[in-house]
Length: 344
Image (tube, rainbow, N blue to C red):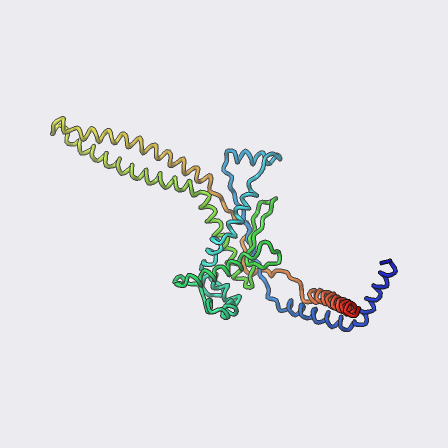
């Protein structure tokens, strides 16, 4: 097609759209009205932002690496730690613990899962499904199938879809590379629920992360404590036997003093063993303290909470009008093109 023919075709379509301008205006008005009304009646979202830092400096090579990092050499494990914390925070195990945490919202003590069901009126949709009809979580739930289905639904609401930026979630987590501060947010329609859900999430993350990080050292320490207790019991027994044997000296034969000599030898052995175990226990306790991550809260949310800023009804109405115009123009041009092809 020549340039002249292209301009003629554009002119034809412009005249066509102009002749149907009232249809375009009507379509734009309807779409703009729908989006504006929807935005006006959209519930407010309250954001409870809790920030914290994780200190995992264990000294030694890690301490040297941190010093070199100050001069631009070496690297930092903080980013890897954040990835680990993020994966733990989004795991089903942690989110299930959050759902089953008992908190007070609007003066009512209940599980977080039940508060979410009530505030978001899940029964409105679940009543259409007889499986979850009037379902609530309780410690005595006997129906495992119902509990598992409801848990999966609520976990999806908490986590959202990480691959979809537009997906709404009740919880979010973020990390600042420069300050190494981790930020977690509760995002719900109730300020009280946003507050308690962010605090509960932080509590479950910190406890689980600390437990898993120090699990091996803690197990070794428990074994050493049990070993030291048993050796101490044997040592006390040997000391008691030696004392009784010493009191009888001079009143019995030399052959009868053999148990006393054995008790003395055992006591010396138990003393050496006990000293070694105590030394190992102290060393393990020191290693455990040095490896235990320290979670430090920077800012903790308090009521009243601010609303999440959202586009107002006017902005959505304008966007709706633009979308309505484009839809109407597309329909008019497409319909005209199809009619022309059929006539030919």
